[in-house]
Image: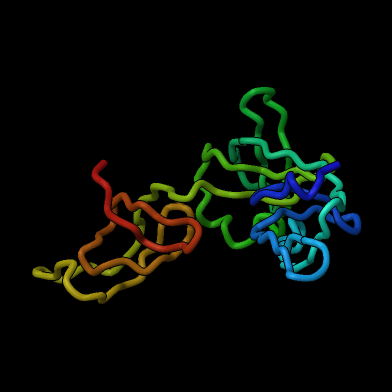
Amino acid sequence: MYDTSDIRKGLKVLMDGHPYTIIEFQFVKPGKGAAFTRTKFKNLLTGGVVEKNIRSGEKLEPANVEDKTMQFLYKEGDDFVFMDPKTYEQVTIASEIIGDDHDLMKDNIEVQVLFFNERSVGVTLPNFVLLRVVETEQGAVGNTAAGNVTKPAKLETGATVAVPLFINVGDLLKIDTREKAYVERVKG
């Protein structure tokens, strides 16, 4: 069991049968009454955020969660197959768990898979991925990075992102997976 002194950002706890992670907390010592910790929890299954005050001395139950680095192998129907590079154990994860990030996953990319009670409940991509442009309009000669004029570009994984006018088919781009946004063109 965790005590209030163990509270920190990223701590994973079990409340009402659901796993939560602490995303924010503040210790409060009012002029009158007992001290407490104002805490924001994010549900690891639904993504919902709950705010709760925890009195000093109150106990929190640890969640049975595990983060594993896994490698994306291939898509099978609507599901995705991942492999643990240490044990070679394969896991199939439904597309609902992965969400919209699936169109940024290239074969053999390493991701973080979150397990709750031995069941996969979330997939986190690396913050940045390198992907090649397979389809975009031809940029006109003389267009530079000046201004913020963009055009759509289809990437090798099927995702479409807004890119500057100077980007061409075959360019390798650094993409921010958190915002699904173009960062820069990379040599390679």
